[in-house]
Amino acid sequence: GQNIDQPTEMTATEGAIVQINCTYQTSGFNGLFWYQQHAGEAPTFLSYNVLDGLEEKGRFSSFLSRSKGYSYLLLKELQMKDSASYLCAVLDSNYQLIWGAGTKLIIKP
Amino acid sequence: GAVVSQHPSWVICKSGTSVKIECRSLDFQATTMFWYRQFPKQSLMLMATSNEGSKATYEQGVEKDKFLINHASLTLSTLTVTSAHPEDSSFYICSVSQIAKSYNEQFFGPGTRLTVL
Image 1: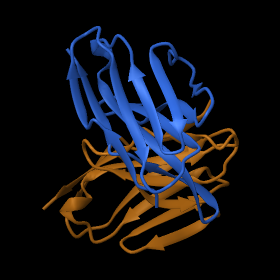
Image 2: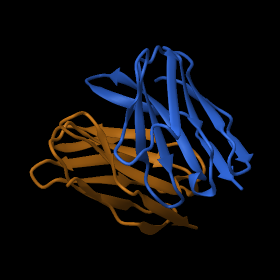
Image 3: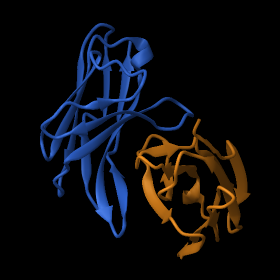
């Protein structure tokens, strides 16, 4: 079966750095997405990786290792507004998005 | 990116009634729209893929006679929850897929929170 694993919840301090991991086992791979979802709102796109390596976009970076079935989202200089759930999703061989359960990130002052 | 709206934002209804949720792609002609359901503290669950001018494709376990989907135009898809029951209370989100760079990025509507009493 297809499976995406991410931690359920993480806590970090304002101004610090946090890394949210995602491992996946899917039938085929056509890219991995990270989305941010604030409580009661729809997800918003953060990043897309299809090749191995690190993609940096401002305070957020996303890394992919296809051989390991592994990705992480790195958030730097954490702000209170970064408190949200972060969803990892993989596009499988049928171009269908397989979603992880999301990681709830709690930022403390 | 594409701008997607949903209406209503939230709805409360009595058990046994039907509820229609609209999803509009405001600046993009979407041949395909997706309907998701999300229960509290759970991830998005794809319910169906809505194709303009044809029947929707439902995911396994989703009752097509209960969740009626109509995609009559390139900018509008509707989801009707027929004879809603309390277990149908959830956050319903639609999305459209647009090719951005070399991949299909999904743009989500703001969601509709349904509470069935």
